View 1: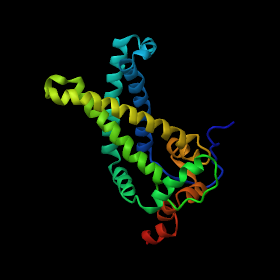
View 2 (view 1 turned 90 degrees about the vertical axis):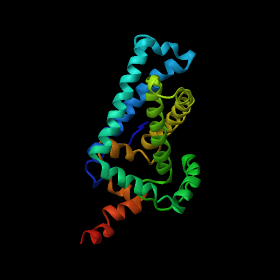
View 3 (view 1 turned 90 degrees about the horizontal axis):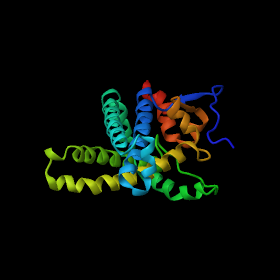
Length: 229
């Protein structure tokens, strides 16, 4: 069984994500997983066996901090080198409307294999918009609470205490969203082409027209040609 569809270079393809977006996406993926695994060592007594992988509890703590700083650096790189991409991303999220609500309501049926007709979507569908709101919010809470917990002496004691449950809750939410995003964005039937969009930057032209017709028309279709004139 092929989990991810074959990359087709022999068909027309369109750009979906630029290099900076892809680099920071995978940078966040790797650093988040490292933070998660090392954090579990500190969070769960039953995860003691993970400490061995990182050279003990002190090693896990060191890797956790290095990964957290690296994740932060990727965030800064994203903001500095692809600010326009972030603005366009936010603009698309703010377009959340009736079609996105219908998409989210119908998606469980599609997920279970029932044939459903989805309303036309913009660059990000309703589910992706939800993920784009929840996951970055969770990561930002993780970063802010993590640094406050790391340097408790320079922050009010009450704020430090509050950061512990915030960090834990944000970790659980972010982990759930990342796992769901990873499956739906790479392995779910019909969605796997989006993996190549984030890996190589392009997706099949016909896939883009089918899954994101509004975005395709605005970016590569007749509307894009008229706007360029």
